[in-house]
Image 1 (cartoon, rainbow, N blue to C red):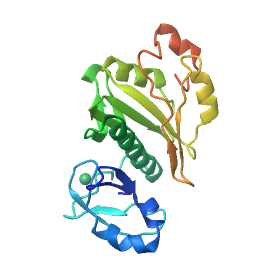
Image 2: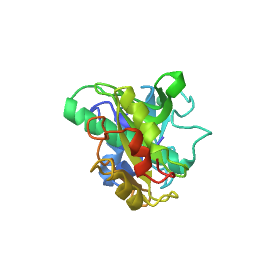
Image 3: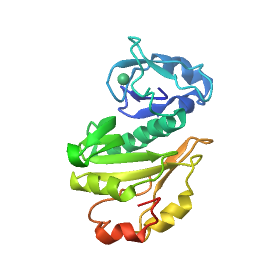
Length: 216
Ligand SMILES: [Zn+2]
């Protein structure tokens, strides 16, 4: 994995950022305690991993990486890891409580469910969807399911995916004046945008008609 939670600061750090810190810090970093943000197991930091690698951190017991999934591309996975980091740190900062965060989890009952890429179940309920190459986006269905189950949601677009992100944001303005999130794979910068909530996005029968089929 690229990210890990610092046991000392309860913050998620990313390997590439740590690697770019001055060298005199790196020996202490290696001995700083880190754990997996998903399962909580101890992880080992590999400071000499080079850019683009997915194994800055590995479970110390050698068990498989919690972010590894055959159904997900590396690009999608990297954006997911950085979303976990941003979401975790933001909620931790605001609430000062432990953040229960997970990936690829169901929301909703079987008849009407979605699997969200990232899900925070406490101290607040919030989900994030990462969009890389998926078509159609089915945003109305995804957001409705989140709202029906008392979740708010972030929509994060990978900038090297197949979507015109600015256009999608323009279309969504017809529903609510909210910004979508963006992940830049070159700089590894991620913005979450605004959280879409039931109160702000009044989804009804007409919502779908306001959006192009590829988005709705
Ligand atoms: Zn893990």
